Image (cartoon, rainbow, N blue to C red; front, side):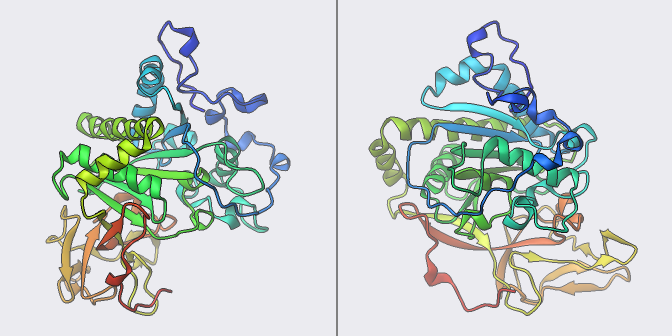
Length: 400
């Protein structure tokens, strides 16, 4: 999917990593075609038949960068993958590895998006073209990406086994792996990568965030197109900036993730034995979105009010005691925001008596279409063999 040309002389490997070989116009630089040039009449929404994908070997992996156009780290990494195609292929021979620049127009303009957040455009209503929805740059691009990597809905299985979606965050999240609850393969992969990155230290620099939408058809993110989705967040990184350390961390995660898949394909029992040694209790410490305990609140997000003249400008500041303290635990009554008059707004307990803040003052969350506010999570245990969060932790809550 990526139009990055492999500069190596090995012509046999020229398109092994870096370009999806699809028929007609989709095969030539499809990831850089302008959504404005798409024939809107040619987009035929598939029948929303939900599939129960049985376990089968993972072969096709697509590494995606630039889902948010001003997050340059992922774009650098897919360029590097394309340039070193032959080496990558020899390291992971059981895998077919391809790349995709997800939102080229936003990337060229150094913007998170042109009209709307691309990573919110893959829900059933939006992807299947509900009547009355505007055909924005991102909505049209989502249709194109779905054709390239999916389809997400319909009678056919997605053509892509795994999407690795590379992101950066302006917040102090370190390395964060985001995987779906119930996806055993991705839970195991996250356990493997986390152990490798942290050197066996529990809750080191690499943390795991699990989203609890079990049905992939209900998830709105780009990674939900494939059978499996694996999202990588690295921070802090300013928007529109490349940092050597962030690139190295991201590349390390990619390497260990592909290493896991390769080992899994060669000998599943060996990799299971290894995980049993690393995690003798069969459980992994993770974070998940905190459920709302108050009417009108959102799951996993403490929203701040926006300026009436600009929906992308907040009326509150994040309190200084929280800045750069991602995964820091707060309690009901702790300082949370500051208003224009200098008044401190305390945490009301909207998501529980004790919670962990994540994506604290994230630049991307100033945009209304991305969802404004602070991320809020709880710490849990998840079973490595079944990929399910241990529910004995859960308390009664209200989810709007």
